[in-house]
Image (cartoon, rainbow, N blue to C red; front, side):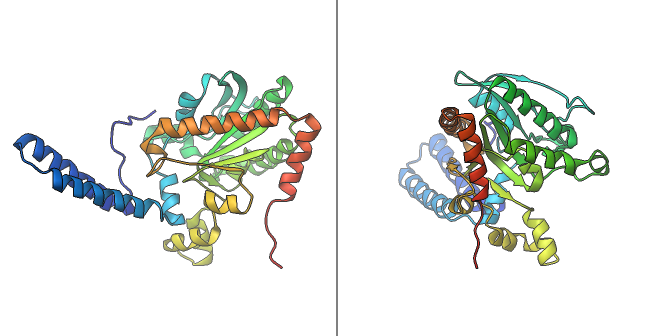
Length: 323
């Protein structure tokens, strides 16, 4: 986990907040070191800062939420494994080609409940991102994920998948090893997996790379995550012929947790602290843990037939048709 004592770098729309915070900090230091009576000024500045935060964070645009979802300080899958799970035992390899560090997976305990956890992992610096391939999994990652899902089915364990990827890796090697087939096989097999599956979108939920571990009985999203068939930049490049129109694309795509919940494509939106999950990792981890326990327990009460019928019905009803 990265050092949470370091203040996260502000995004462009957060710079007015950062400037006021810096001014307030300077005023407090001045009052403390010079024995100056500045309580009235400090109180007024605190009130102004609170109003500014409220105005910005309660009126975030879809594009601003995308920026928060991509924040380099945002907690990743392994951070949540540390905070919300116990005794994680990572397993490696797809038994065909090799291991994929962009898709960690293994056994873990969720408040006394044994489970299999699978997810995307990004890096926080160049070295880590090269190791994790920027969170974009190869075919081996999806085949490893399926191997562990089948193991979970064999031992009657729930599967928890954590999505945080801009998309599956589109490189030549991935194509040669048939990335499309690996994802398609996961979609088919997860629809018929005879054990509960709960998915949570932590940050980015991009295209088939996300859906390859996202077919689930319950789909959860963190408040500032997004889930879409293509990135806003990719959509803008197709429709407007330029990536600068990404904010308009994000608005049109309805990719936020709030939008998707309104369309019944998401079962629960997990709230984040003001400013995003990176401002209070433990708080959002507790909320995530409570939600996972609640959904895993509810699904565990279903019979195998009830579970599969409900999953089939869930995806048959997905989407809206405007005639």
